[in-house]
Length: 406
Ligand code: GLA
Image (cartoon, rainbow, N blue to C red; front, side, top):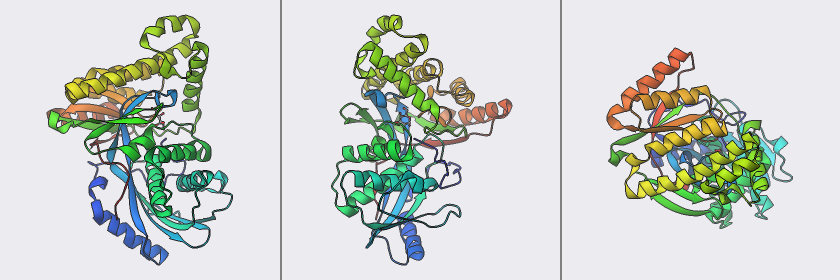
């Protein structure tokens, strides 16, 4: 999902994404800070990235297809296991101070702000019968919060990668995906799918992750905008959103209703050619929700084919079509996202769409490198003219998934 209710950090101001390239220097600083705070060195430092979804929105919980990529902005955790059964959590942000709780009977109500993400992961591991000992954890995250870039999943994926290593649990990436989904759904309270954590855990530098959400099979698809003379701009509208709120859940409920009326296990099982008949069986709103999911699944497959055969320069129209479908059929866009997309397109982007769960967050705009400044300036100008808060605009590139860094 996205915006923590009590974010661990001030919203970062973007730039061109330095976190992923901080490499071991950042990790060494985090380890040193951990030692100052907790008195002994950590057992290690792990990181996990946020994600941008190239295409395939609200298709994951319909057992469909998604094509996200891990971005070069990460959450890092320094962790040490301790004897006993106390979890101590600290972040590098703000003045929230040390949070401490016992490991027995973990309840969401015990969590404070961002601590629900690591505690949710510990709880999900316990639910799987994995014994988690006491631990100290220091978090640092450069994934912008509330921007629709999966800042919460980045934290969860960094934590589960660390605990999987440290406890020797030996979970496969697919199992870590399901455990973090359980943490989100049942501990954090956001009814989200498996896309974000799959990108964060299974992403690969220079690639998008083509994920079949029914069986979790993954195909890494080369996505190298730069060598095609393009940049991927993220336009963070600064409109915050939370998928623990009603809009996301109501879209999910409409999809479930549509599948039930159409007599299929999930909307994944409906083809574009079935839509005409579906129109006669569903009420107007449910039909439009269904049409978005069905056509979006189709667009994901087309984008994969085009990327493979022709490269990133060929996918612009499908990005545009995806946005139109989310704006008109799924109704999860907002005026700021629509303006960002329209201004980017009108000033040289070859394709643009809102990305993520919707109701705020970020748009992406695939832009020829020579037009980057023009697009940036036009979007900023359009927001100022509309009286909106200035957007935060930065570039992203597909980066590696979660890993131990020291
Ligand atoms: C959020 C959820 C994902 C997915 C997207 C919409 O990011 O966390 O599971 O449903 O929205 O595509």
